[in-house]
Amino acid sequence: MEKLRYFVNGEFKESKTDVWYDLHNPSTGEITGQAPCCTNDEVLEAIAAAKAAYPAWRNTAARKRTQILYKVRELLIEHMDELTQLVCEENGKTWSEAAGDVGKAQEGTELATQAPSLMMGESLMDASTGFDTVKYREPLGVFAGIVPVNFPAMIPFGWMAPVCVACGNTMVLKAASLTPRTAMRIAELYKEAGIPDGVINVVTCSRNEINTILEHPDVKGITFVGSTPVGLKIYEKAAANGKRCQALCQAKNHALVLEDCALERTVAGVINSAFGCGGQRCMALAACVVQVKSVNCGPAWDKNTRLGPITYEKHYHEVLADIQKGIDEGAELVVDGRNPEVPAGYENGYFVGATVFDKVTPEMTIGDEEVFGPVLCIKRVKDFDEGLALMNSNPYANGSVIYTQSGYYARQFARYTDGGQVGINVGIPVPVGFVPFSGHKQSFFGDLHCLGKDAYRFFTESKSVTQHWFDEEEKKAKEVDTWDGLL
Image (cartoon, rainbow, N blue to C red; front, top):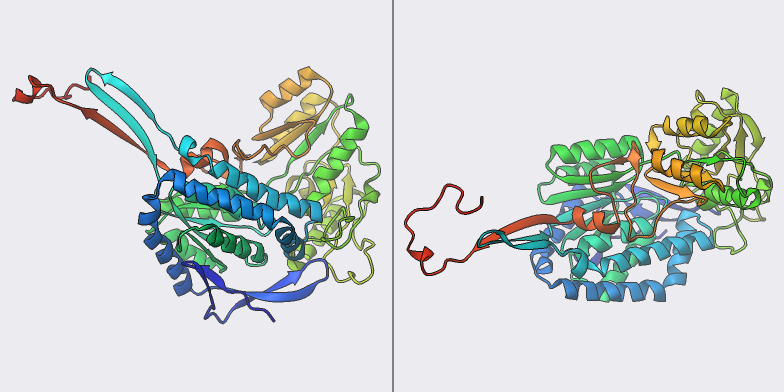
């Protein structure tokens, strides 16, 4: 049984913990190793390493920091197949989905290589006569990233670490305890690229040790991705301890499908949005769903598989329970994804097939709360206004989608939907990394989102410097006005 180590100060170390997390291959159900629940002392060690590395890294020129990230990008490309296989085996994404996960880590790294320009501040000569003001953006110190199970490459090493370290900060990543291998391997690639020891540290631990991170005075900020209840607690505790925080939380993304939509292309988009990544990005859409049964289940690394398994056993049973709850609440189960056909040898995998409920009404939990599995809910409405109102009544607002050929309704939707990321005939309305991932309502807590220019603002603080140089006459002045020339 392989026992994973934690990564601190540039090396992998054996944990002294007595508590271990079983790691599974979700396609087979087999235990493939164990990850440590790092002790409190080991988490403190990671924070101390990040703090010790910060002064030298902060004083490394931005151009030199980004040169290392260019090398990271090259290594991500060089090891694309290896990392894709890792994501398949530990997370259950299909091959193309896993490759996209790694590709998004590459995209976030490319955003980070632009640090010398995106960290630039502002300046004004003669802001007041003879007084010049310059605003700089500077790093803060140690940040912590708290990572979920569903995107083991993109979230820690696309959304969190690259811009953080490009800005001159250091980081402690709390990798997902059930899917940590990809993050550990990419941390190794950072070291190979030349990142100094202690700049990136990766641990796996429990909520008890996370509390240590949230309370530690040397940790200046928290970036979190996970459920809304946990995200709200993270945000509140971080704020109470004087830390900046961004908490990206759960969603119940809806699509409004109008009668004038391009039907076949809309169906294809809905199927992809609802069932891609095993539904573990939750795009709950209202749409025509013919041909849904053609979405085949199989081992994640088989390039013919369209729908991979649920990532871990406990959540597999939670998804099945949610399906049963939908039945109990009175929704019409049109396509039952329980006990799907899978290839021989994979009967013990955590597979849930494409599942579709029709006639889902507002009082049903299945339609309003996140299932985080391949479950599609159809909510019937009579027109655009009723559909928009139904969508906006949901407490989550990560994204929202409309399928239509009408420019008028598309514009009205973009203007009045609550969704922070809007798709017009785009089922997964997540922009490229140069634009912030901008969830709203209970899908996000904080002021600055991840990615784009928001990421650079989150991982830096501004400093305004006002300067004035005396001429020969002013050198002799014995009195100064109350406002010292600034009015």
